[in-house]
Length: 182
Image (cartoon, rainbow, N blue to C red; front, side, top):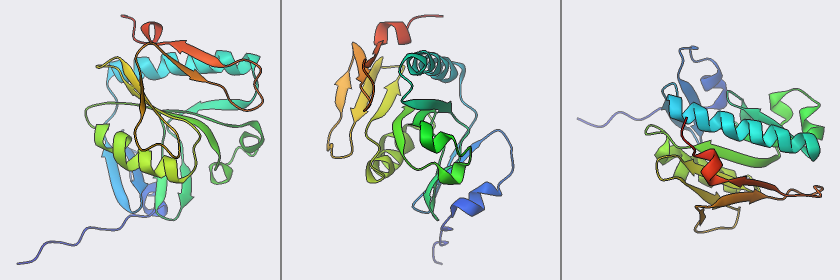
């Protein structure tokens, strides 16, 4: 008795899955399914989104968006980053199929997403040349900072900094503020 051969998923197949509250993504044909996020996850996403949106009002180098999204770099890739920034030029298209250059990607860890966020999706973001990828660990109160060529992350426990091209000032977020109690 042999093992069943797993399905090689495509972005188009994922787009046709039911809207059932789960997040469906695919990276190199591997289907990633995660349940609806927990409260603490969404709180961190909201804080990150607000801080970035305020920064981008002052330094208009990109547009901040949050999941759900439909970022695809090929037939077998479709990701939905928790928080991300795209160039203003690409954002003008208002078309997911034209959004390719992500300037910053942030994933907030959840029990169901840790493997995908830290490995599968991280490798894909590096392959795509995403200049900066943050993996936010609310439980550990730290952020892994990845760049395309990094073999290991920088671990930040005090603050994260993002200085995109064209910005006069850097975005700086104190982690004590991000991880503060409700």
